[in-house]
Image 1 (cartoon, rainbow, N blue to C red):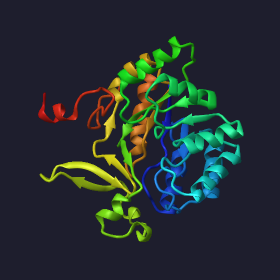
Image 2 (image 1 turned 90 degrees about the vertical axis):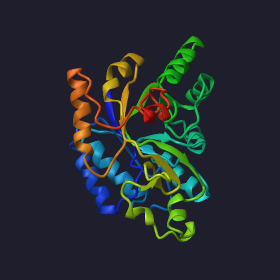
Image 3 (image 1 turned 60 degrees about the horizontal axis):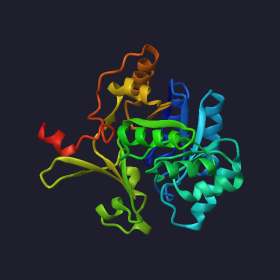
Length: 292
């Protein structure tokens, strides 16, 4: 199994972002996803900047994947995708069917990102015909569903793609045309002032009782819990997972990467240090909260 770094879902200043990826170049991570997947208004780095970062990481020995938006709302966003696909130097992670169509037309293989809706083996098989070579299941697709889907694919004469599963970090729960951050701060979406940049790991949202609940991240909602599938390393291996995916965070990520790297190197599953296993185990969150 290999380690991958997911595209950064948070909005950070340009220099902080560039410094982050300079550090990543020396970390024991095999695959690095780059690009804006949440909001096209976040333009601290443009397409050319991302390509420069990609080339630098590739020179450091990393496999680079250029990730696309999960929610496409404008022709200008399609144009940005078209430039990424047209570059041709790096594989694309398609998080929307627009990107799938562009890759198919260009005859380019792609990674099926978690933004795609894949809930049965027929959908996965069709995407493979379009060029999908690696699949990242969505947040709510746990071990049981993924196993059933892959078994059905093989029983139908299909070939399973590379499988990449998120094993660390907050999970993306939803996207919307409405900007949740702008709404929370009572500013118009079209004049938001890029307020997301003031919250490097999202805007915390609590329940009415004051308990931590969600993270607001522009047009995206993230879970509050930091998911950690370290203890499930053996089960992930038996399922045939090829790539372990880690979601960026502002602090402490290098130690997380090293922890999973050591687990893969030694074969000893690391103890859980994050909150829970998220959707992967299929356990109801309410049961966990109640202690049952």
